[in-house]
Structures are given as structure tokens and as C-alpha cells.
Amino acid sequence: MTHNIEAIFLDLGNTLRILVKDQDHMARARQRIVELVGTNEDPVTFVAKLEERYKVYRKWAFENLREAPESEMWTRWLAPDFPAEEIAPLGAELTYQYRQSMGRRVVVDGGREVVEELQRRGYTLGIISNLIGTREIPEWLEAEDYGRYFKAVVLSSVFGRRKPDPSIYFEAAKRAGVDPSKCAYVGDNLKRDVTGTRAAGFGQIVIMISPEELAEAEITDENRPDVIIHQFRQLLDIFPGIPRSPNGEKGQE
Image (cartoon, rainbow, N blue to C red; front, side):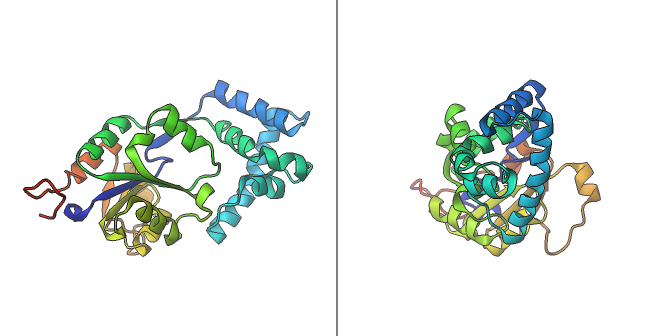
């Protein structure tokens, strides 16, 4: 199946990047949030309240397969008890700090080496991710020099639609200039990362999941991926490279 694949799209959370609970980092972000909002509440208590409100927002987002603009998310769900005209302009910074209050996000072990090798093997690479916030990923791509690897980056926070809505996958394939049937997606969620990808007609679906999680998962015809892996490095076993014709152009075996 992989011999037809020309583009590989990666999920971010729990796929290319993982969350590290850095307490000092988290504390600084919580403090910055209360300063931005202008409250005297204890930072830990206030952010805990935000987390409960975020669950309500997340339920709405899941049900509607939408991602609200940051200004709307904060004025409608997360901080509706503060003046909207003051909170709305702070939406992007508040979202960024809220994400930081959860911890630091770092690339998985061997992540850069795998991405570099997949690109060297001739694959067009991209990112498709459900994500609140518009500044975190562009800043990360630039700061750590990952932007040069990814031709198409489609985030629900910018695009407005969330996985498993097929439109986010169609958009990514379009930006990459590759037919969906020749695209693969690598994610970590057996439900949304499989159903949406399949509905979009992607050629291959890879799910990265721990053996422990897999043992407890219920695999059905609806959520069955084409390949299951346990480590990011295993992508190099799945995608050996794009066959090329004698003249050096991409071609099929």
C-alpha cells in the first residue's frame, strides 16, 4: 500500500510532540494568565476554573466539529465574567499561556531524525492537528527550525473545522498538491484520526498507540487503521521511500 503514498501528514499531540509537566513553566504561565485577565484570584485556583470551563467548550467543539476563534472562546466560554472588550484582544496571548499552563511540549524521541529522513526519502510532509491557539505552532516551527520540513500545516484553530471533519484533510492535501489517495495520515486517536481520514479518501492511516492503550481499545471496522505502531521511529519501517523512474521522476513500482 505504501508504494502509492507521496505525502505524509502528522498529528502533533501524542504523535510528533508530547507534554512534559514542567512545574516552573506551568506556574509562570498561570501567573501570566491572571495578570492578563486582571484578577486577584489565586493562579492555581483560577486556571482550575478555566479547565472546567474548557471542558464545556471542548464538548461544543466536538459536537459541532468546529474550532472557535480565540476571542470568542475566551469571551463566551472561558472568561465570560470579564469585560468582553478587554478580553477579546487578549485571546491569542491568553490561549498561548493557557496551553503553557498544561506543561511544555517537546518533540518525541528521534522525531527530528525521522522527519528529516522521510523528507530525504522523497515524501511531501505536512501537519493536520486539532488545536486551540494560532501562535504556538507557527512560533515553534520557526524557533526550532521545523518549518522547512512541512509543506502544508493545517490547524483547526486557523482553519475553523476540526477532525474528523473530512474538510480539514482535503484542505491539507490541496495545499500539499497531492491527491488524497496518495496521502497518509499518522495520528494517535482511533476514532477521530481514522474516521475522518478514511472519509477524506486518504490512502493510508497509521495510528501510534502504546501497547497498554491498545490492549484496552476496541477495534471495529469503523476505527480500524491500516497500520498500528508503538513508536514514532517505526514510520521509517512503513515508508521506505518513493520509487523513482530511471529519469529520476517519481513513479510507481
